[in-house]
Image 1 (cartoon, helix red, strand yellow):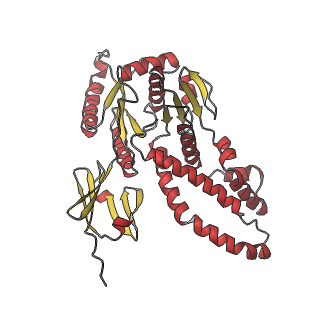
Image 2 (spheres, rainbow, N blue to C red):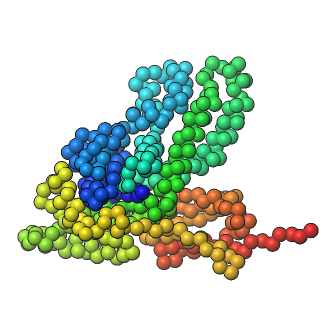
Image 3 (cartoon, one colour):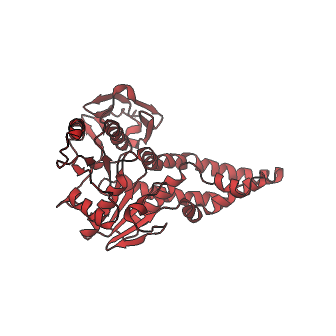
Length: 394
C-alpha cells in the first residue's frame, strides 16, 4: 500500500500531474484512488468526469473522489455538532449563521486525513494519490496529526475529568447545555482516526510527497521551503516534477531570453534537489484535460518508470548512540541558523523552523539525559543528548 501526496505552489499544474500519476499507476495494474483535498476542487475538471464525495469509477483500476466538507461534517462530527448547535441555540444563534460557525479552520484538512486513512486501510486500493491543496494548506494538513495528538493527549483528558466533576453543579446553576460524555467519546473517535492516519503518514515506506515545480524563481523558493517543512514533520519527498519546461521545438528567437532564464532555474533545481529523482515535463501546446491528454502526459512524464515502485522516500530522522551519547539527526536543507530554534521544555524537545514548530515527546531513555549540543551543519540538525546520569546507589 502506498500513499503519494502531490503538492506544489498554486498554479504549477499539480492537479494534472496528480491525475497523470494516478493514470500511469492504473495502467500498470495498481488499484488506484485519486482523492482531492483542495477545497477549490479542479480534479473533476481535469479528468472531465463528474466526481463526488464517495469514490467513483473513472477508468479501469482508477477511482476518483472530491472530498465534500459538508458531507464529511455529517459523517464524522455527529454528537459534537449537536452539542455545539445546542449551545448556539441557547445563545440565540440559529439557522445559516450557526451552520457557518460549525466549520472551523482546519476542518477541511481534518476530514481529508480521515478519508485518506479510511481508503488506505480499506484493502480496496494499492495506491492513493492525494491531489493536495497549495503548499500552505498542505503543510497545515500534514502538521495536523502532530497538533491534534498533542491536544488530545494533554488537554482533552483533563477537560473530560473536569466536566465530569463540574456537570452536577453546572446543571443546577445554569441552563447552558453542558457536554455529556458521549461528546468526548466522539472526539476520542476522531482522535483515534487521526492517530491511525498519523501512523501511515509517518512511515516513509508507505507515504511520500511528490513536489511539482515550474522553472521560476518564486516557485523554486517555495518548493525548497516546503521540502524543509515536510522534513520537519517527518515526511520524505520521493521526487520532483519540473512542469512546463520550454521544449526544444520552440525555436522562435522571441523565447531565447526565456529559455536562458529557464536553464538557470533548471540548474538550480538540479543542484537543490540533487539527491531526489527529478522528472521534467514539457510545456504542452494544448490544455491537458481529459483522459486521452492525461495518458499522453503520463507517458511523457514516466516513460518506462513505475510511478510507484521506482520512487522511494527516506525518513529525514535518524537516532543513533555513540560513546554513551545519543545523537538525533534531522535533515533541514535550505535553513539558515537564524531561522532555526531548538529548546526543551520538560519532557519535550521543540524544533522550530521559520513559523513551523514541532514538539517531540522524548522517550524514557532520553528524558533523563541533558541536551549538550545542537548543531546545524551540511543541511542537517544534530541534537546531542549527553550520557545518562548515574543512579545513586544506596
